[in-house]
Length: 99
Image (cartoon, rainbow, N blue to C red; front, side, top):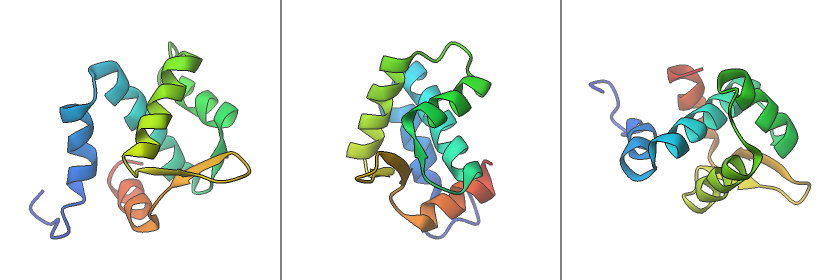
């Protein structure tokens, strides 16, 4: 992206580079949903939002994708079980770019 001096595009492009095609699709949908929602979400709500985009999203593969997104520092899981972007600046960029 020509107007991306902080290289935020890397957060999106690395999904298709390092994740399998199904996992990348689920990850994109999850991040899109959280960015659009604008607040943390628990697993059932997030899965439901992803199923609006990807009807065939199954619970366990989606749970595994969320775990990878946590390990890769895209997401944070709070003590109440809600998922959110780890960094608000990335969430803002994601919402501006994709949501």
